[in-house]
Length: 586
Image 1 (cartoon, one colour):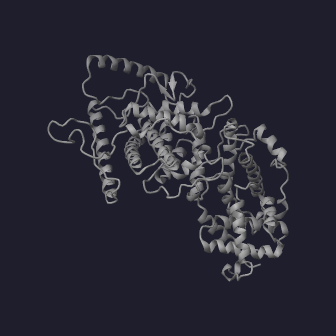
Image 2: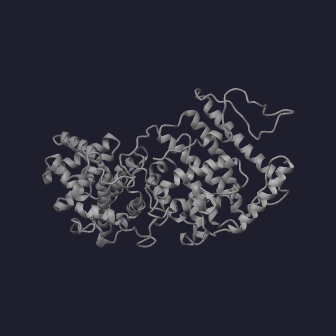
Image 3: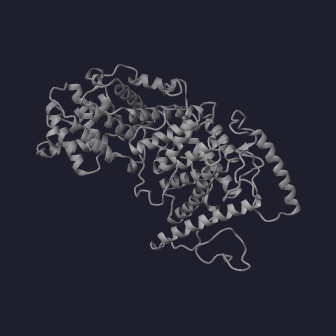
């Protein structure tokens, strides 16, 4: 994982400091700093609620004063001037040298504004930029200084975008997208504020996962996030009221950043143990699973996209792919159907279809004997074709996970393949969450095992494919859903052996994701009955059945948890099973 080369929050405004400020905040003769300082003792828990109230009040007052000063300086002109780059400065009267520099800078701004009209994304984004920063560095009016924004932009380019959009061979898409996004933000105040907000929340989650977020550092970041959030909300509201800006792609990106980057100082869990998968950081899945979703912004975003003609009307490079990814992550945590269609980074098979594996990975799959294209051993048991196809995709992806676990592939040597791996991963998760419930299946495709299988496939995907931080995964809810589905669609003695093997796989998945003793014991008890019926006498017997459906063949995969669950089954096999309920008896 790349580490930021410099701290972002160290030079941001509104930081807490112990002791007295250098200048009094008010009174005659006090210099106007534009800042309000407070003294907070991080070791005193009683200061927490009061300090948050003071911080929010000061942040709101600070932004209001800045906007009021700017409004006066602009002498009644509109707060927004779309894509002109002619934003006013709020400094006091400059010297004659500063006047000359300002005239020169304004002339350069007008030239750049003429070259960078809205949606003119065909221009070479690499010309005269550094992480998207043009020279001269022109920034819309903001609560953050040029230096602070420059640091955030570099963090976005060197840390966030390198993993969010994995590079392809001879095509650094992550750099191209970032240049265009930053160039758009430099001429759109709402997008700039949202961009600052999104980068700050990412840094908060990123440093928390690395164990670098001390209480004082967290407090500093949260104050900066508050300032950026208030500024972005105000600017987005004004842009929405402007018919010329309401449907701009810059505003769509701004609302996306606000909707999918929400963070609360109380939401960070106590357990930051990371997933064992070597692909856990692909497209920052772990970091973005820490961040929450502002449903107001997300719902507004979906309405705005619909009003402006849907995703096909969006031309800004990288935006629709990120909208699709954000929708998958949101749906994963909420266990809902994604609000956006699947859109891959690599569109070799079409705009809404996963790409084929690259030749380098396909050759490894072929040599492993599991290419993913052979007929499934489950085709004859009545499971719908879409579910069979999803299981096959999961099998091939599980082999790729094994290649990384065994050192056959590494992140460093497989950089050009990572975008394809991300596309295949996102396809699996999108498809698993989009499978219809049993109640919506046509009678010809219905089978009693489908509904528990659907929930078990979602669970396996989160365990192995689309991995999120374990403490934030929706496993408790999924285990209850699998249990209820088995009760609603009881096991039948007339099921053939292959169908029973699928049931065994479902019960093991339900057991290893259970977080409470009662639910885990329920799955263990039922698996004990099924095992006695079909002759599963050992862990080795169970392991063969699990692999016949889909499994990760590695000691650091699911085996330790499944083995512990089997031990529990053995310990219960001679006990009573009255707690299982009549709906689950064979």
